[in-house]
Amino acid sequence: MARIIGAETEYGIATPADLTLSPIVSSTHAVVAYALKHQALRRSRWDFAAESPLRDARGFDLRRYHTVPTIDPNAIGVANVMLHNGGRFYVDHAHPEYSTPEVTSAIEAARYDAAGDLVLRGAAALLEEHTRRNESVLDGHAPCPALKLYKNNVDGKGASYGAHENYSYSRSTLFETLAQALIPFFIARMVFIGAGRVGKGPRGDGSGFQISQRADYIEQAISLETTMNRGIINTRDESHSNEKTGRLHVIIGDANMSHTSMLLKYGMTSLVLDAIERGVDFSDLNLEAPVEEVRKVSYDLTLTHRMQLSNGEALTALEVLQRYRERVEASTQEDAHVLQVWDEVASALQRGPEHASDLLDWCAKLSLIRSFEQRGVPMESPKMQAIDLQYTDIDPAKSLYHALVRKGRMRELFTHNELHKAQQEPPTDTRAYFRGKAQLCPALEAASWERITINGQVLRIADLRHPNASDCQRAGFDVEEFVSGTVDVEKLEHISGVERVDEH
Image (cartoon, rainbow, N blue to C red; front, side, top):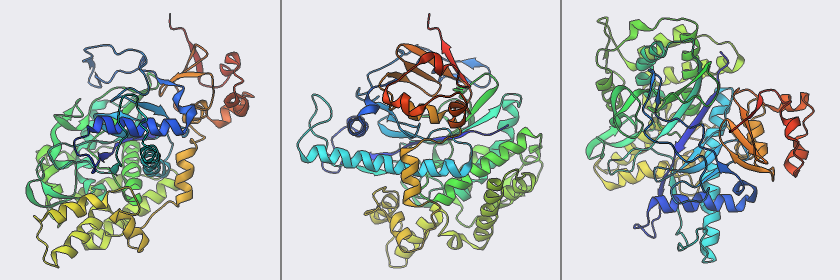
């Protein structure tokens, strides 16, 4: 099926000038400051009516409560805005979280993912303006001190926060088939997409460097949970679309600074899903002890550890990825580009991590760490942890990642203008186009991934590919009139994919 891709990233947040300030409050400040700058974003509320986060793909629903349909978009801990690019910026589990809009290719998924840094940097800068004027964006709260924001997955105190991926898939493919085929792949792909981490164990108190930030927090092969008892495969069954389409929710990945790692994360996974839906068999790659292998692969910087397969074979992560590489096919030019990068990175890693230090996060970070080791700084030194953290700082003036880019030691795929466009404009070939444009409509009251409320009328958009720019044009729907305030709900229903919902 035509693949739709999206991502959700929780950013690390700190207020160095006031270490006692709750990250729930500081994250709320960030989201509300961004909304205040973009006044139109404040009009709509998040519509929770279609949410079902405890529905399990294995056939049951653990829902223990019913949330209210909408909430105050400025409320502490749940502040939320829909963005002009069709994505979402909100507070989740004491972190500011950015969700990309739905896109149709890996390269666009990577571009909109990277654009999230611009959203977060913009929020921090806007909040700083208010603080300089001694103003608070939250009623009843003091001005928020300057924020530090990091695109990472660990706080160094035992907690991990997510960088989740989402892929549409056909429900004609059994979820059990997906899970079986993806478990070895998700473990092996760490060597391409790992962000790198100083320390081992959930609290990072074990000495050493490892490939993945997420590895120490994976406890089961298959699980519904995302904040505890995390699984290699997550079973959340919340499609945000129609009954024919499922949404694979992937929680085992790391947050990436490297554009190449982002491209491979989305591109490789999409190609493997294509192969699974074509009926390609990956059962020969089943692992004897998959959960244990997650840590073993992450801890092995030589890439020589051999995973024990159920059929008696023992393969390295690179060898497992090569088996997947041999069975996937490129159906588009963009797929071919992903395969080209896949081959390039695999070849570099076969020669050693230092040969991929301009491509992958963990390799770039390891190169920095080893340079300090050569100067006599021990791995246990707090300076090494500071290097780890500073690499992921999204402020270009402070970030070690951005310093490598400026020195020509890290390859980027997107220019600043391309990322700025992704921050401001929605993709034109999915329903995110209509949602993004709707944020400028004065009549918009509430929104979610699949629903929009305009002048009291609830409209559902179940098809991920509609209504896009072409649909609106064919229906004679004038987007510019729409955003200026002229709303004809009857005309909206003529757009492909839009249906009115009777709430009663």
